[in-house]
Amino acid sequence: MQSHTIKTWAWVHKWSSLVCTVFMLLLCLTGLPLIFHHEIGHLLGTEVEAPEMPAGTPHASLDQVLDVARAQYPERIVQFVSKSDETDDIWYVTMTPTPANTDDFRTVVVDARTAELLPLQPRFDEGFMWIMFKLHVDLFAGLPGKLFLGFMGLLLLVAIVSGVVLYAPFMRKLDFGTVRRERTARVKWLDLHNLLGIVTLVWLFVVGATGMINTWTDLVIKYWQHDQLSSVLAPYQGQPTLAQAQRAPLQQSLDAAMQQVPGSKLSFIAFPGTSYSSPHHNTVFLRGDEPLTSKLLHPVLVDAKTSAVTAAPAIPWYLTALLVSQPLHFGDYGGRAMQIIWALLDIASIFVLGTGLYLWLKKGRTAARPQELHGDAKTIAREATP
Amino acid sequence: MKNRFLSLWGWPIVLGLLTAIGLVSALFSDGGFGDQLSGVCLGIVTAVGLWFSFRR
Image (tube, rainbow over all chains, first blue to last red; front, top):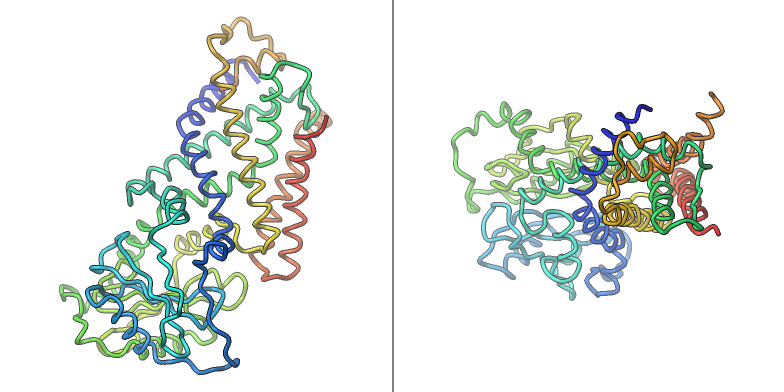
């Protein structure tokens, strides 16, 4: 590789890394507890469990469940009801002041069989895990925060690609995995940076790319509604959000949706006027029961007034990409072994970021002039590292 | 030439392929073979990183 080509790539690697490193360190650190959020929830006592009952105990009407939730927070409205992946026996009812997106929410947890409040009513909008989650997702800055972190993710991808390009001139004369511990600290950390960088390469690229895609969720949903639902919702154009008093029982919407897509499970229902629905519909998001289809959602728009299914559109490729991105980012789809590996690779990534920062800080003013470039690994290393 | 390429990129390519197989195979499995294959593939990648990092 020509020396000026190396210098160009080194410049790209240096600046793309430097700009995003602090944020990436934050994301790696806050992501670590999020990998184990279920386990930490058990430890902190926020993980809800339904009491044991005979298998096949019938479920109460969803409207009874809603009544119980509304009694807890009469001044709030319901935005979503959802089921967890683990059990069918618990309803999570998300309640907010208005249908608008907000961090001011309360979650009411109700037994699906008895329509009674579960003894444990955890607050999901406060505490250590909430802080970790918010720092990881949007820096407490809403959509601008998400998009900013998405841009940092893009810079990470640039840093990874340029790092791979630079791997060749650095490692030309070294065996894979060489760490020259006997040399200066700088050389040792450079070798570790290159080793862990190349080991975590594909994993970090995938996690970085899917994380970046996840930051676009709100925009992708908006685009989907504009792109795919505008024609479906044309008859409802200009009508205000359907008042609570005019809505049919929610159980009817759920039943209609389940009949529309047999063999599916409920993920969540978005209420009229919320970001995942229209002003007139309960949008029921169903998922398949196969390993892969369980990660994909089938939206069914049910008229909240008549309980008739208005549409059950197939999701477009960009929503499929978004939904497949989620497990690939979270590492929550391969059992305990995958969680542990996710954590180890996350820690390795912290080392890559940390050693990169160290190499830049230690570089000082020792940058070689172009004519000093002889092409040997040692000089290139001095020249090209951030 | 070929040997030089392989000596430089052989390991990275193998590790990259193992990571890709590990990430994808678990998507098609729910506690079955795909998850085990994923654990083995990603486990090898992680073990290689640890081995070379701590080798004296």
